[in-house]
Structure formats: C-alpha cells, structure tokens
Length: 408
Image (cartoon, rainbow, N blue to C red; front, side, top):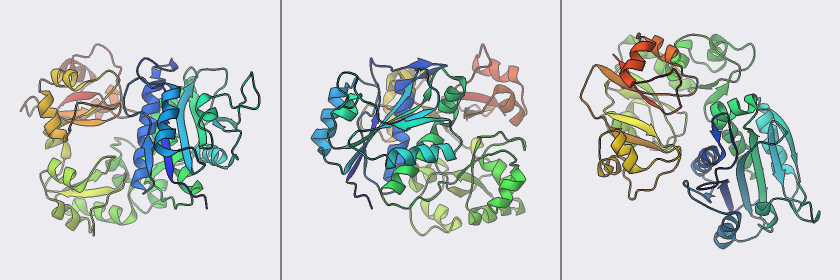
C-alpha cells in the first residue's frame, strides 16, 4: 500500500492569470471548481487534502511550489494534483507525471475517466526542451521528490471537450477522487451517482438500483422519461428508495439530496425542523452525511414553497458587497446567514441569500446543468415569455447557478 501523508490540490491560474479560455470557459474558474470538489470529497473520505489556491487571486508557479515545500516538505509521501485545461492541437484529457515517478497514479486517473466515457488523449512524461533530463512544467520539475501530477481536463476550443468541462466537470473530478483513494489503499464507495449509457431507460436504471422511476424523476428534477447518454443521475440507496416510495400513502415529507457543505443542523434549520426529527424518520444513528445521500424531510410536501432564502453560487468577480447590492440586502446579513467570519469568497461557493420579498406569487429556482427556459416553464406550468418578463431576460441563455423567479 502507498503511504501518503498529504495530498495537495492545486488550482491553476487565478487573479490576473486567467489561463486559457474558449466556448464560455475560463480556465482559472473551472480549475478552482474542480479543485474545491476534489478537496471536499477527499476530506469527506477521511483523507487529508489541502488547497494551494482557495480564491481568485494571483499565485505564481514559484509561490505555489514554495507553499507546498514550506507546508508539506519535498518527500515522496506528498501527492500534488495540479488541475488545468488546454487549448493546443490535441483533444481529450491529458495526465502528465514526473520523470522521477512511475505511471501508476496517472494511469489510474486516465482509466477511471475513460470508464466514465470521457475522451482521453494520453498519459505521459514531458521533458524540458533545453535540458531533456528535466521535466517541462515547473510545478513538476521544482517540487522535487513530491509525486506531482498535472491533469488537463480537455481542450476549451473543442466543442465536445468544452461541453464535458461545462456540464460534467463534477464527474471528472469524482473519477480523480476515486483514482486517488484506490491508489492510496483506501476503499472507494460509490457516491450515489450513475452515468447514463446507450440503451438505458429510467425503468432499467430503477430496476438495476432497486428503486422506482418516480423516485429517480423526483430526486433528479426530471419532467419526462427522456435520457441522454452521459447524463448524470442521482441514485438513492435501496432502503431510501423503499422509504421514499411510501410518500404517496399520506406521509407528509419530501426527499432532499445532500450536497457538499451540508450538515444535519443546516438542513434542519433550512426546513424548519430538528436534527432529531430528521434522524428519526431516516433511521440515522449518527450525524454523518455523504454527498448524494437522500433524506426524508418532514412537515412539507414541496420544499420550494417554504424556502425563504435564495441559494446563490459565487462566480468570478463576485464580492459580498456586489452580491448584497444585487439582492437588496447587506453584507452583514449574508455573513450572519452563512456563518462567515470574513469577506473572502471562493468560486463555486454556495451562499444563502435572504429573500427580498414576501411575495408568494413566485418561487426562487436555481438553474442546474441541462436546464432550458422551455424545460423550466414546462415543469412549473408557465411560459418562457412569462419567466423572461419576470426576470427581465433579453435572451433564452441560462447559466448554471443563476437564480430565476418562477410564477406559482
């Protein structure tokens, strides 16, 4: 078994260094999203992980290397994963490993990404043009004996790669998490997601995972039975499926899927219930949660009707002041609601924003991957024009994390 003390996750770019860009993708933003995901998942699994960059600020190669060496040393029991994108002549995922290392981890990462249906270019070592005895990339070359890997998740100028980066970056990151866990001798437990392959139907998937079509549609916010190859579905455990299927018999609860950063206390507070009540109806024996876990929440039948807060996803350029101004609230109120001790934000961070109105004529909806105005309008029995009017939209374009008012 590989003995690893530390795993350092590096988000390339930041600040003035935006990295490569194309098809609506900016490298520094997605490298941070992917890095935060891997960092959170590894720590959830009990593996010590650390981030070199936690926000949108300048960090040179020299500063990254010094940070790693000062904090964790230069020995081979430190793994460094540098997350990047590319815009060269190649398509697909590249994994580049050090001349000093074997290819086991790089090959594991490539294999798991390939298993999930992602286009792979290659895994390889890259030598410096001037001195072939050295690695080409400074973060590999100068991190001495650390086991340093660069992952380039695709070409931003290729339409297929860019679609995967924008819509399936979490799956990519999860494949890397799986590779790291197995490489370091840990046991990887599926996170509760399934990727649709050719020939799949909701019925066949429900049967495979001992659940029902209705439960799958409910926890994935599906309005039809149509699936697309590569689509990511949340899958409840078999016991949760059996419990959820009883909701039609008069039980007053809805299903909630656990996300990164959730705790029983936060969920209970959000839905005006108690930790003990959630544990009771879900037969929980402790307070531990896992991403993708499905919980029954009592007392309501539609969570969208009781939300008093807006969920906002932080994007590049955001500040607490700009967000507070946008939603007609205050910085102090946002910090209080989110238990923030300073004004620092990170891209991809989810903030609770107090609702600025008591108007019961609409609900707040957060756009997710795959959404369109037509699909949302159909889901809520309204029209595209009405949603555009209510939100002052001038086009049909949506962005993940965007907050929309939807008429009831």
